[in-house]
Every structure is written in structure tokens, then in C-alpha cells.
Amino acid sequence: MNQFLAQHGNEILEATFEHVWLVGATMLLAIALGVPLGIVVARKPWLSKPILGSANIAETIPSLALLGFLLPLPWLGDRADRLTVTALTLYALLPIIRNTAAGITGVDPSIREAARGMGLTDRQILVHVELPLSVSTILAGIRVATVLTIGIATIAAAVGAGGLGEFLFRGLAMVNDQLILAGEIPAALLALGADLLLGIVERVLRPAR
Amino acid sequence: MSDPSKAPSSGEVIIEFRNAGYRLPGGTALLDNVTFTVQRGETLVLLGRSGAGKTTALRLINRLVDPSEGEVLVEGRRTVDWDPIALRRHIGYVIQETGLFPHYTVEKNISLVPRMEHWTDLQIRTRAQELLALVGLDPALFLKRHPHELSGGQRQRVGVARALAANPPILLMDEPFGALDPLTRAEIRAEFQALQRQLGKAIVLVTHDTSEALLLGTRIALIEAGELKGLYSPSELLHSDEPVAAAYAAQLRALERFAQGEQP
Image 1: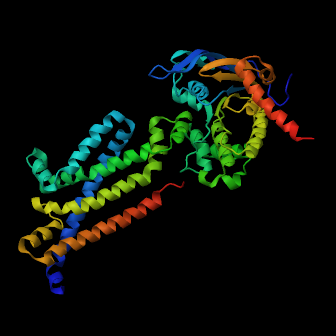
Image 2 (image 1 turned 120 degrees about the vertical axis):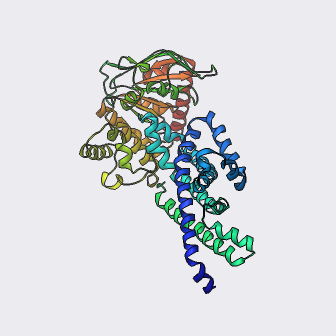
Image 3 (image 1 turned 135 degrees about the horizontal axis):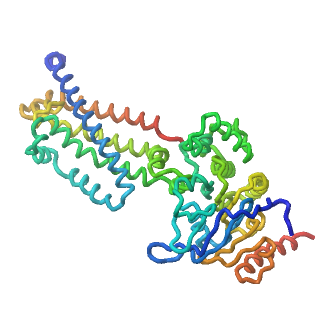
């Protein structure tokens, strides 16, 4: 065990950082896209089916197959990290879109009516009322998406984008439990840590009711 | 019969309905061919059953909906010619569930519109304190509370304070005291009568409660199934032959007889 860590410690650390980088970039992108899309879904019912439908379909494609689909695309296929982050983002979108939309449509109609009646513009209602009131629902979606992404990000190794998946694939190929665990354990710890951290953020930001 | 508890109206017409109607996209009329005026300093009560179209009438005034027929004028200008945001900031709106923002303190709830109208911090703070005192809540105790820390009656008072924040000349109230227990309701009504005298605004108040209509209204508009059945002073309503008005009066008299029967 000690010998294994002495030999692979740096490698594990490096892969963990790579993993965090992939997940971080994915989540930033997924939030930047998913929250506005969620708002659109809540505001424009006729767009909700196509948006949620597409996100649902992306969710059902196996991750390896999705990477395969994206590989021939011009700019995306050029670099493994771009490719991976794009694929991961497609997976992370659904929970974020769905929860953002649910949070906004879940705002008490009498509160929205009062806000409109007071002369708030649609944008002001969104910024001052709807988003603050749906913050915990949206964060719950981000939390789910993050944990999900940490797991799926192991697939990055399949296209050479690094991350903790390297150990999994190598371990599987060499039938080496230690190598598998060297990928698995840090990934599990990352997922737990992210879950805990986002749970705390959620509690801090939750509006008083 | 002049009632000293009611502010005299100045005769200046603030709100006018001219054959106004509103239909749903499917064609169902919620309000049909309604004509009346509201003057400064007067409280017009819209009395009717649930679903009679009272709330729709209010929403026509602050342009939450546009009339399908006829027109509604606010200060002489058709609502459809007003910028809806400017119009709504010009009108205080109190709804039954209060619609207080649960994530804001009482102070932030009250000062939201003034803040959007770019008042200074000092003006905003002074106004919030002034308004809480006006509706009978101690500013020192209540400014920093959240709505969930208030009783129903207190929430209702904050709702009124918030509607008055930017000092609008018009106040729309949609069953503002409906969700309260009878005693708190009587209390707030009495305070509201005092407020009416102080404020001199044009007030339109929606209720389905006959005694509330008689107590608070300078005039009462009877609305039934989307139609205006008549405009009455409180004493006229009690003696009208119009079937709907007579039904309300009879219901009230039955209560009165019961109360008298109980007393030796």
C-alpha cells in the first residue's frame, strides 16, 4: 500500500487535479447554459418540450457513444479536453435546466402577481423575486449534476483527456485492483466532498421563509 | 345622510370605466359592458360573489389585463396608452394573500418600489418607518422581520404599507382583509377607515362581505356574473329593490334579527 502510494502518489494527485479541472470547466459551462435554458423553459412553455426533450435525449446516449459522435466535429474533435468537457456538459445540463425551470414555476403565483402589480418589469421579477426564491432548487440541480459529472468524467481517459479514469482503464486492462481503487477512491471522495460543499452553499443561500 | 367617517370626494375623476369588458381568449366574458367612475378621496367597493369579475375589474385598472371592449381611463388617459410599468408604480396594489416577498425583510418589501424609483437611502428608510407607524406596527420591532415571522394581520398591514410606499394616488385592494379572523378583521377595518380619511386617495376595494362593503365604501358597485348591477351608497344598497342588492340586504338583516333575538 505504502509502496504503491510512493510509486503512484504524484500520479494520483495529478490525475485528481485533471479530474477537478474537467469537472469544474464542465460545471461552469453547464451552469452558464443550463440556468438560462431553464428560465426559457419556465417562461416559454412552447419551447419547454424541445429543450427538455433534447436534454433528455443527450442523457440517454451512453457516454462512450457520445464521445464517438462528437469526435468527427471540426473544432471539438481537435482536443481531447474540449471533446470531454462538451460531452460532460451535455450530461450535466438536464438536471440544471429541469431544476431551474421547476424552481421558477414553483414560485407562489400570488407573489408574482403582487410583483407585477407593483410595477416590476419581467426582468426585475426574475432577478429580485423568481431567482432568489428558486435558489435552493437550482442549487440542488447543480449538486446532482456535479456528482454525476464527477462519475462520468472518468470516461475522459478513453479519449486521452486524463483524469482519474486513467487508473480505472489501466487497472481494468491489467486486472490490477490497486490501480482501479487508485482511480475509484479519489473519485468517490471528490463526489462526496462536492456534495457536502454544495449542500452547505445551498443552506447558506436558502432564502428565509 | 353624510357620514363624517368618510372623506369627502373632491369630484375629480381618477378612474373611469367606459363600457369596458374583458373576455378570455376562448370568448368567455369575465366582465361585460361596465361603466363607472371613481373620484379622488372616495372608496368604491366592488361587491359580488367569488368569480363575479371583481378582481378582473381591478386588473383592468393597473393593466394586468387590457380591456377587450370599451376602455378604462386612469387620470383621463386610457390604460392602453399608459406605459404599464409607469401605471402600476402609480397605483398601490394589495392582494388577499398579500404577496409579500418571503425572502425580503419587511423593510425591503416596503422599500422595493421606492428603491426602483431611485429614492435616496435616507428617504427610503424614513418612508418605511413612517408607513409602518401609519399601519400600526412598531418600526423598531418589525422592520427587520421576515414575513414568516408575522401573524396574518401583521402581514396584511405590511401589505398595505408596501402598497402605499411610493405614495400612489390610487389604491387597489383585492379582499385585503379576507384571510383574517373576524376580530382582527374588525380591528384592521376600523384602522383602515381612519387611514382613508388621512390619505385622500381614490380607493377601489374588492370584497364579497356585505358588512365590509357598507362599512368601508363611500359607494358600492354590485357585480354579478360579469355585469354591473348598480351603484349604490351604503344606505341605498340596504333599501334597493334590485334583486341582487335586496338579497345582500336581506342576508344582512337576517343576521341583525338573529343578533337582536339573542338580546333580551
